[in-house]
Image (cartoon, rainbow, N blue to C red; front, side):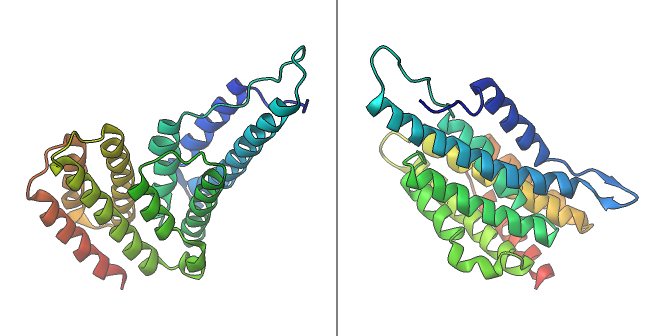
Length: 241
C-alpha cells in the first residue's frame, strides 16, 4: 500500500488557503504585492489537483490488489460542487487579472486542471458548460494568453455563452437542472467579478454598470437587463483595443 501523502483535513485546509490567496489584492509602496500571492496560489492549486487525481488513481489501483485483511485507506475527497463553485470560479476570476503574467498563469492553470479532471473522469459538470470551458481554455491558443485584448474578448464571449446557457435552461419546458443553473451562474459571476476588478482598476467610473449585471445574475430575475449590461461590457472592450 502506498504511503499517504496528506490527510483529508490537510488537503481541505490547503485548498482553503490557496483559494483565499486568489483574492489577495494587497498593495503597498512596491505596488500590487498581492499578485505574488495570487500567482503562487494558482501554481499550487494545479499541483494540489494533480496530487488529488494521482492519489485517487493510485487508490483505485491499490483496491484491485489489496488483501481483505488489510483494506486500503480512503482516497482524498473533493466535492464536485466545490470544484465548480470555488476552484474553477476562483481561477476564472484571475483569468482577467490586470497583470499579464498572472493572467497568463490563470489561463494555463485552468487548462491543466480541466485536462487533469477530465482525463480522470472527475469533471462532473454540465456537458455544455464543460465543452465551452475546454474550448475557451484550449492549450492550442496559449500564445495569446498573455494578451489582454485577446483574453478579455474571449472571457467576454464565455460570459455571454454561460448567460445564454442559463437563459435556455430556465426557458426550457422541462424542469430546469438546478446544478446547471448554479454552475453557469457561479462561473458567470466570477467572470463578472474579474471584469469589474480589471475595469475598476483602470479607474473607470462607469464600473457600476457592470455591477448591475452581477446583481442580475445573482437575483435569478431574467429580463431585458442582460442585453443592456452586455452592451455596456462590450463597450468597455474597446478601451483595450
